[in-house]
Amino acid sequence: MAAWQKTIATNLLGPAHIAHFAARAMVAQGGGRIVNISSRGAFRGEPMAPAYAASKAGLNALSQSLAKALAPKGIYVFVVAPGWVSTDRVAKSVSDPTVLADQPLGRVATPDEVAEVVGFCALDAPASLTGGILDVNGASYLRS
Image (cartoon, rainbow, N blue to C red; front, side):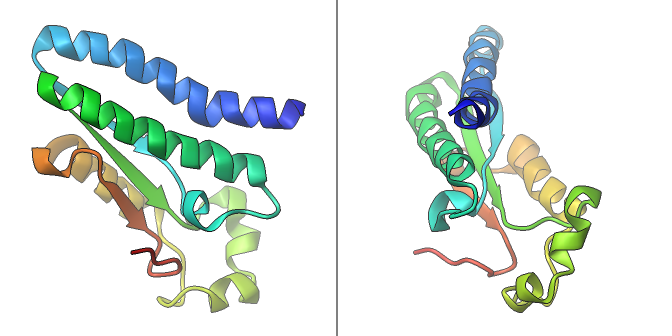
């Protein structure tokens, strides 16, 4: 249970607290943007990490709720949902043939690709995209 509490605190409660305080400041300045980082695991489930998947699904619901509540105040909320990302921490996992077989691009996303989408949301995304969840997973998981 301690692992669940830590995961929920990190992936859901932390962003909720940050959004609360950030939104107050953004209201005072006339608007702003919040970009949360989710995961494809929020949609497909993670049998080996159910707390992680649940926390990210909760983050999606939180973000969409905030998008509805804050849009009238000029605050836009976006979610970026990567799949596997090629980082040092997961280098061994992302080179596993089983993982690569699930990647239509033949590779996982790079940190720069994820950062480009985050930057778009933070700077250039149209207001009408508020509440949107952008998948960055190279078609390894598709939802409709």
